Length: 294
Image 1 (spheres, rainbow, N blue to C red):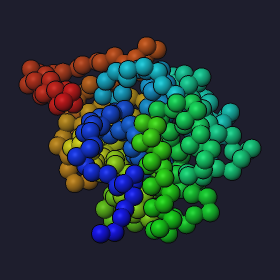
Image 2: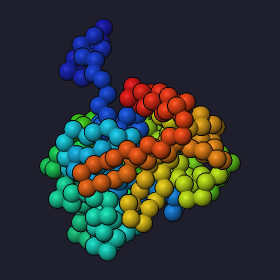
Image 3: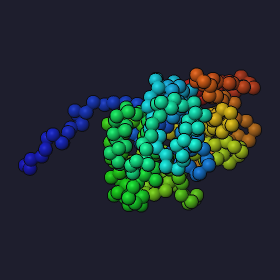
Image 4: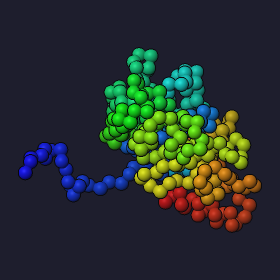
């Protein structure tokens, strides 16, 4: 019988089962890769700034769940200026800027599988890494090269697991609107395959100014319900729930009514403003909140 390296080959009987740790259940897990995709102007960056602010201050997720404590975030963006765009957005979102870091690309080139990225996660103890857009950080790699993409995503996944860091890659959509949501990302489908959660932001078809966050892939939990938000000049972002059952495109809302349960950002967290016209609506809202708690 041919010998094998017993230090490398393991038995699953020796593996201790562990539960998934969540930044925001079931949308963003710690220790895994999440994709957030959408067209330009659909609110991806504003939405993720809201999440960054919540993580850096230890406040609340969009559905009102408390984050245990303030945590360090790395936000790497190639499209916007650090001083004139990103810093003002962080301030508007209410982020703790002493908890939000970036790698200075004026001093070094940077790619997704760059050792500088890993060292930053490790050295800062970062619990969230956001790369915006991830297509800009493939270095000399070809996004359509299956083997190259798999290698980069595999290494990134190892880092996420090793440091228990939630990695969110923000990406643009291609122009093929007739294809399934999972195939709308620019580049190889292997990027989507490596992600444990894929989120897509789009504009509501029925409500002007309303954005819809839809989970198009969830490998670790049942798919989350569609969550809606709108951008507000004073409050930054206002979240609310879509009452309609998830449809295939996940965008349509009731023409006349949606739950007016807006989670409004305040200096010390979120307040819940309920404007419910009937006892039946109250019961429906309570059941909805219980489903999110589970």
